[in-house]
Image (cartoon, rainbow, N blue to C red; front, top):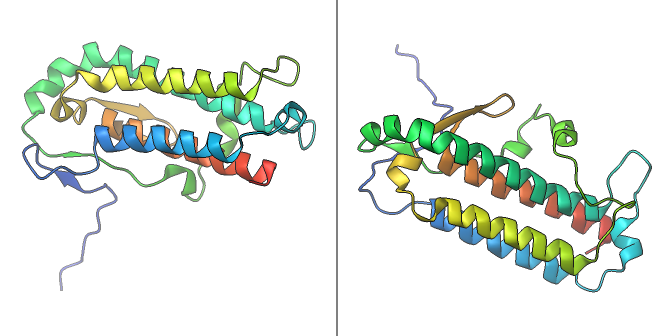
Length: 195
């Protein structure tokens, strides 16, 4: 009897296949979930925003700024990888590639404690208003969108980077990981603020 093989990789699609969740869908979700979150927490006081649940835990404002800092770091990494790896990826552009990835922040054993590597710049010692946090995150998301704007998905799907916690991901999956990351912190912020 032949053993069945289960793939741990996400499904792949051919470049000319029916559109699947790709760059446009991931960017749309990123923008929509940001706006949903800030609409839900509108009117929160600065005291609530910057109150730490205990001295070793981040405040809601710090979680929000951390998402901006991490998005910026990933965008810069991808901007560095693009000119280096895209010539090779262009030769593979006719092959199938993954456009989605599971929510890595829900994986058992995912090291959620590594956020300290991307500390928020805004803290209770350096606070700002909710509107400023919203604007800063919106501007970073727009910078992410500009990065992806002129790049063909079949090439993005073959530019692969490696993350020690996630493994190999292409730049489309990397965008999706960023969306999952924002959602992970959105949930924490909503819980902290009771929204």
